[in-house]
Structures are given as structure tokens and as C-alpha cells.
Amino acid sequence: MKAVLGLEDGTFVKGQGLGVEGIVQGELVFTTQYTGYEEALTDPSYKGQILMFTYPLIGNYGISGETFQSDNMQAEGLVVREACKNPSHHKSTRSIYGFLKDEGKSGIMGIDTRMLTIKTRERGTMKAAIVVGNDDGEEAVRLAREQPDIGNIDLVGKVTCKEPYLVKGHEGGGSIVLMDFGVKRNIIRSLNKRGINVTVVPATTKVKDVLKYEPDAILLSNGPGDPQQATNGISVVKELAGQLPIFGICLGHQIISLALGGETYKMKFGHRGANQPVKDSRRGIVYITSQNHGYAADEKSLDENVSVTQLNANDGTVEGLEHKKLEIMSVQYHPEAHPGPLDTEKIFFDRVTEAVKKVKVAVR
Image 1 (cartoon, rainbow, N blue to C red):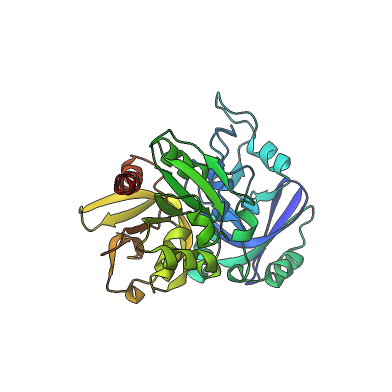
Image 2: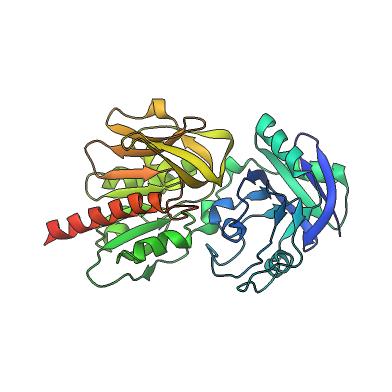
């Protein structure tokens, strides 16, 4: 199939279509990971974005469905140099070609992804459009330009759960209310395997309804879009700070930063990949982390009662924070993803577990 990718700066490139014929609009972002494409494509944090892989061959081990982070493909479209037609893995049930068709999604291959990555790094993240079925470059550019900025779209509303639901750990393990801004399944699994019962609630859940579940702690999940759009989440943190332990991951980290009086900003092209170095100032260790975000907390805006505990070793952006007086902690990266050693998973989720246990003991 003919296909073309157009950018808001007027650039367009022609290639071969993937998936179904149609039009895809979104913000073009790149990720440096070369495995984990199944997890990335189903990550709700990619809602509203066209995902481009810098690694030149994607789909080698096929699609198993076992590592999906949600029920469906969440990225709006896919951009790759080459997609593997004949994957080789004993768990594979279909190719990435079949996956996109089954999901009713479109993508493009056979284009210079290195050029597009360099352009994104120099120019910054841009609006884009993929057209599969024809290769009219001028039309693709027009479609890219006509869409609204991603910061003006309520993307969380598109991915949050519609009704609360419970995922049980084991009896006596404590309970957490997880506010769903686009939660990845591995976050819930990481809590469950530590025995914690997780009640997942919509992003719009008010404080009084959160408290009805009598949680031992609150966790704010990852998710897509501008954290300033998550006004209810900010209000929940403000009201419950000091009443219950509060934790956050990715977008949840940014929401906590805003609730504590800080500010956030959109990054030039964000952090997306499985090899982001994070330096822990207390432990003196650099961890390799998995990340997917286009916004960050402004360190200079944070209150004196907030400690920045971790920084990105590449650009110095805030990766972790804690409140000096209250049980509030958050990280910008994904500790549940563990791209290599499980260090950050243990540090974050063990801290959450300890806080839950303390609350249970205090209640008794």
C-alpha cells in the first residue's frame, strides 16, 4: 500500500503502508528501545501520539499478547524503518502486520527514521499525520497542521477506566486506591505480587469517594497528555496530603509536583526508551530506567519542603521527589517496567508496601 507521513513543518516522506488504510493524526515521538514494542504500543501514555522506533527492525519476535499493558493498541500510529514479516518466537501468535490490522490501526515503513529522529531532536516534537492508501504529501502536511495541540486535548478521559474495579493481592496485605490516568498493567501486578489489594478508580473520582474504600495509601498512575489537565488529581493530592501516604508514577509524579505548589513544562522532545540513566543522590547510584513522558517538573519551582531525590543523568531533569514532612513520594520513570535489573522496581514498590503496612499497624 502507498503511504505518506507529513509533519507540521512541511516535511513529508513516502513509504509503504502498514495495517489498514486510513488517516492517522497525532504528535510524532520517538523511542530508542529495540525490544518491548508490544508493551509500548499498548501503553496508554502513548494515546494521542504516533510512535516511531529508532531501532531499524521492529517485530522480530512477533506479538504474543502476554505483555500488553492495556486491552488494545493505544498509540495512534506506528512508524518504523522495517517491520518483520516472519517473526520467530515460540510465544508469537501473529506478526506486527497482523497486530495493526486486528487493531484497525495504520502505520508506515520503509522511510528514513534516523532523519526524522534527528529532525525531532533539533526542531522539537511536532504534529504529524500518516495517510495509508495514497501518498499525497501536501495533504499529509495539511492534516498534520490542522489538528489541535496535544496539550489542549483531554487524553486522560480517553484512557481512564469507566467504573472502579478491584484486583486482589492476598488477605491482610493492605489496600491501595490507584487513580487511573492511563495505568499500565504491570503497575497493578507489581503491587499485587506484594500482597496489596488494588482498587482502580477513574481519574475523576472525588476525595469523598476515594475515602469510601478506606485505603492505606493512594497511588497516581502514569498517563498521557499535559498534567495541568488533570485538575481532579491535583485536588485529590492537595486534600489528602498528610492524611494518607501518596505515591505517583510518571504523569502521577507530575500531578503531585503541581499539587505541592510546583510547576511543569513541556520538554523539547521528551524521554522515551528503556535506557534512561537516573542518578539517585542519596544512594550515589545511577539506575537504567524505562521512560515515556513529554512533560517534566520544574525543579526551581518546588517548595522548600520538597526534596528532589533523583535526576536524569543526561539532562538534569527531575526524576524523583519526596516531601520532607509528609509521606509523599513519586518518580518520573517506570519502576514496574524494569528494562534490566529490577533495582528501581524494588526501591519504589517496597517503599509503597512499607507505607501501607505502617498505616495498617497504626489503624490496629
